[in-house]
Figure 1 (cartoon, rainbow, N blue to C red):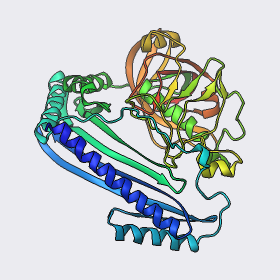
Figure 2: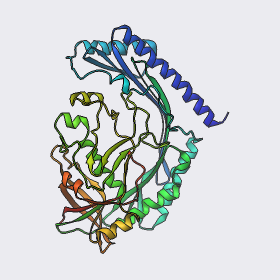
Figure 3: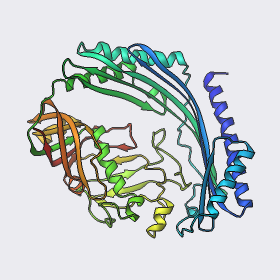
Figure 4: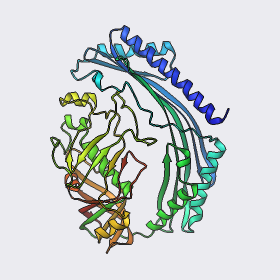
Length: 450
């Protein structure tokens, strides 16, 4: 039997064991007169890291835990166990029941509505086994770092390279009779290097996929990491000014993630969002469209159901600039007099529709003169007020052409204005995130430097 067949057989056996454990826990809770939901994830993995062509770490993972939530009327209790023996599961159920009995009633507590549950879950092809042993993982990391170190003589040191392989099982069940499970895989290869003489710069590159065969090559990862460092060398500072700003695609995902946080039920029912009461209102330009597609095959953020068992579905988040939906769990939905939108555990494959072809090159031409941001740092984002102020580095652009790298600057604005003043989204789509967007051009931001 091939290694991949052995791996699949092992995971399938674990899947059946976990389904049985979930069923046992649910039966125990029901016998005690409680509604309940149980989730368990088991992950088998291999991680290898190298630095300067020497092995730094080899780690095997075999992690998993069962979590149970019980509801005695409107009283909730939680418990978990990594021991899946029947006695350990009983102890966890008993602990959750004991906690529930001493918890104050909450009229929003309970399972999500039965009609929302994923009693039938599609196969999203998230599991793709690969024959990877320690030696192969080490060789991939070595090759990646070697490619980076040899790409340019100005690369003088390395933070290391790493390869990760993880395959796992996810099971969810509740006392409605729902019991669903699926297998998944995830592979990644990354490298970070340092360049320069007096003023050192560092940067990184990575590739990630459900399918090992879809990873970029070690040479691609290593050389890209080196090239990004070299481009950053000898940065200049800027005087304070107000200019158009482009967020490079992988940084632009952060802008959209702040938007996601602002329309999440947890922020909204606590009245801690700058987008409170904005459902059905224009929050972005009229050309802007954002959709969620949780059932795309083999994607990193695809899932047939959320962490509360609610089936995921295609959603239009923003249409023609108008906010179409909030992101709700069962609890936050109840708090707001609405139903879950299937977002317990996060968002699933957000797709920002570009309005400009030609990639970053076209977007630079569209901007003309301004700042290209390739990295941000710091925690200066306030979802309550919309204040945005972060350290940044990138490149100064004139007449659509990159002139020189810049560093030690701060970019600032108000998130509501940043969203409404979005001028264009390019078609250089970043696909490694749960948010897939191209580079984003904002009409203006304050840039503080010298």
